[in-house]
Amino acid sequence: MRVLEPFPVVWHNAGFPSNNNYRSCQSLSHEESHLLLPADSAWLALERPENPMTITVMMRVDDLTPGRLRDFLEHYWLAWERFRFMPVQRPPGWWWEPDPTFTLDHHLEIVPGAFSESALRQWVSARLNHPLPDYRPRWKFWLVPDADGGSALLLRIHHCYADGLSLLGIFEQTCPSSPQQAPALYGAREQADLGRWKRSAGAWLDALVSNAGSADGDSSGKAGTSSLERLTHQGLRLVNELSQFLIEQEDTPSQLKRPLLGRRNCGWSQPVALDRFRSVAERTGCTINDVLLSCVAAAVRGCLEAEGDLLDESVMHAAVPVNIRDRMPEGICPDAGALGNFFGTVFVPLPVDGDTSLERLFRVKHETRRLKKSWQPGISWALAGTASLLPQGVLQTVAGMMYRKASAVVSNVPGLREHRFLAGCRIREQMFWVPQAGNIGLGISVISYAGQVQFGIVADEAILPDPEDFLSRCLDELDRFQL
Image (cartoon, rainbow, N blue to C red; front, side):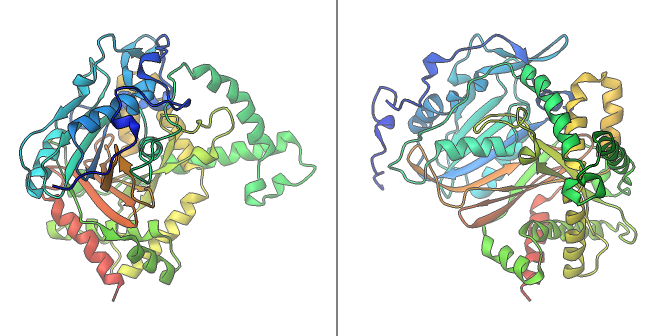
């Protein structure tokens, strides 16, 4: 058996690290109950029994033991105080309340027995179909120490706690690039934040007026233009952008729009060198994200063809999350290490009727360029923030109208560039699966880590009984670009 290199004193002392930036679990402030921010509570309002709003993360970690994992969670994961809180609904909305009986034992399970790769896929799929209890903080870790290919660490966490980039930020802060290093800066207090957002609204409006038109080189941004003219210009553009967003054509009926059964299966591809995608992007003048989306479009096309769906004139979109942290004004922009949801959604047309790989790629490129210049991410983020304020009947109508415009969710997360170490153990692979709101039953996730890319998929059985076939089609499209 390989002997692990000794990890820093954190893992071998009974005491806590002496780092001044470390916040002991015993010193948590446990602020009074406070309202969730609108963008966080939206995920509780949008949840449906057959479509829970839960993010699932899996990492393959070499030689991770239960003792090391427990130490890691106690010392580092729980330094984010929110993980001791649970969302509770009472007038006028959703509140963060501390769990009075919190114990890590409720949120950590060690799974015994050997797991082959296929058995692990079935086991992960089963976890996806089990709801998290709503009477405790909505997150849980599972460790499978004896899985083929290395220990498998699975996390399921409700979307109201954080988005994918926030979770990635936690692991970036707590998983150093050397097994001999200990995390230095990490954790965040849980405190009421709604007042700060309200105070920032005026500043945001002022910035909107003063910057009107400057980004587009429009005449309304020229010196001497009055504030009223700039505000009018921005108001008209907002109306136009909102109208375009709301009247976006709905997807045509296909196997991807069948009624959901609420039983989901997942899968993941083998790692592929990131340089393969980069090479295609450089040769075609596109981005790596364009190449990834065109691979997804080809896989969707193949599935539709296999079902006999007509592709000519087909309208099909992917709901793609877009990080908006760099677009948010001061006062609303989250602090480093903060949890929460700070992304909008754009509906990217998938060229499933494209006959060749290059046609699909260049059509994806055209659409992503157009959407990058639009206000659609911010508009969708704002609309999602109103979800918890609407009566349930109205909410389902509005959500149905929005999510009928997409047949799949596609999330691309740029991960860490070098290998990281969790509790002194090397993280070999990272994978995640995204939730799908409304009546969407197909989610595709793409993550890069340490120079490798992996595709993940989660699909309702009514939509896609065999996720592995879809993953193969994605990689087949990449092979076609190499010809």
